[in-house]
Amino acid sequence: MTATSADSMLRELEPSVERLLNRHLNVTQDWLPHQYVPWGEARDFDGPWGGDAWEPEQSALPRAVQDSLIINVLTEDNLPSYHFEIAIRLGRDGAWGAWVHRWTAEEDRHSFVLRAFLHARRAVDPVVLEDLRLRNMASGWFSRNWFTPLHTLAYATVQELATRHAHRNTGVLCGDRLGERLMTRIAADENLHMLFYRELLADAFQAFPDDAMTALADILGDFRMPGVGIPGFGSRAARVAAAGIYNPAVHHEHVVAPLLRTLSVPAATGLGPVGRQAQERIGLHEEQLKSRAARARDLYERTRAGR
Image (cartoon, rainbow, N blue to C red; front, side, top):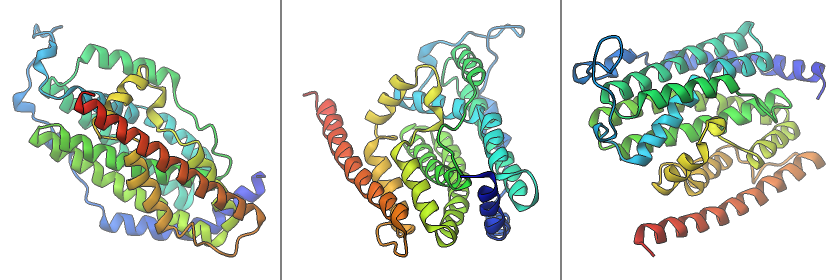
């Protein structure tokens, strides 16, 4: 994809960006992150103020929920890298730039409030969390397969929807009323972000059907959550999956399948050879994902049954 054709895509879609940004600003409800932290239940840690060091028994959260929250907050910490990646691909001027900056401002609340909540609740080891933050941010994050602006939109759509469900499920399983309320609040942000990207991607399907179908096929076939580079991600993600917070079944049933239905991907017509090939790739990917989800579901059930 040449720079000129990418520029053409951005120009063609900019009226949609402006319309969807205005809709977003009209429906979003700003909230104050400091109001979601139980400050009155916090106490000083060891260090300059002479508080108490963290001990594992101080956390009332299940291990998988701790893992999920660590992944969540460390993922949000990498916001500077995400902003850079999106800004250089979508632009910093006009409606595109206005959206990118607004999205960044809203996402920035999440890392602040999650870390403050974890500290106030003594939910995870703060020393380990800080070490992981430094190591994770030192590595940064970059998109390996954002070949066109449409790849950026496709990835953001899938990722925001996946994150919405991961946050909600984490809240449900945390056994903490305030924690569940916080995760529900964050998930609401992610849902609105997903709606913006999904509707913009839908407009891209109308304007550039072959390119949009190809972008979605590329992203779905090689999708990875942005936290995959976090040190120890594999073992944490495995416990998160086994707990039902986010796993292949959730990915298929609550992310991929509804997205394909909403965008009418299986029934799309008017495609050229490249678009039809991408459409077939998406269908094959979904069938493979169904099989992986079924195998994973069986494994989790047998593991919980102790067999």
